[in-house]
Length: 279
View 1 (tube, helix red, strand yellow):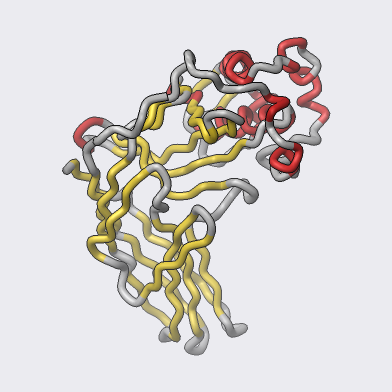
View 2: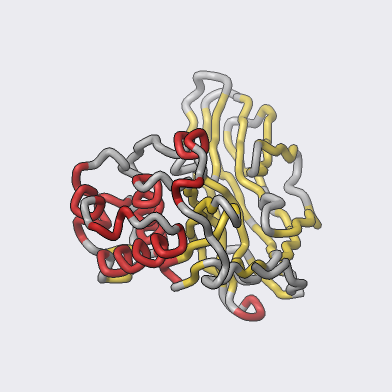
């Protein structure tokens, strides 16, 4: 496994706005995610107005909490500099054996959900394959990856996240479906796994796309990136920018709006793709 290399940084300029209409003058509590200091160095150049930055485990987020008028808009513009910390884990490294993962660690990652249906009988056809019981972590990942790539035969962007079960049935999906199916299979095998969401930035910031990928826990190398949509196993590159880490909640909303009063609230989050420049 190579060490972390020095790589370029990206500057993200977010121009986001919450438009709202209410009865009365309620207190709004708005929560939206900020880039965590995991696999990347994060510098906040311009903070969103009237927001407090909070941290919970691996994730970071902003909180806006104040009384508002009956109608209007709130700007959450911010500028963030992010330097991804490149790390490559080779297929030549020792990934360990699945049985070396502690029972306590396995049990943390067993809950079934809409997107990771570990209790679905539809997964039995895959689970009953001989390869599924492969004990070597590295070899299991190779075989599971081939299984996922063979199952999702049509790569196309989805308007909504389908989850592993629908991806299995229909054989279609984008990065969300590749990630969800792989995570589901890993958890069925007793391998801790989680979902990362954020952005994939092309060279020099020419384009930026919302992206999702997985990480699995190795008893010898700890967390290893697995991005089957981009055919990348083991390499966290400078193109990956992390916004959220979904470990025990399979679907953390990008933002939440709550009010402490019973006022009727209509709101719309105006979110443009961030402007990205390389540094």
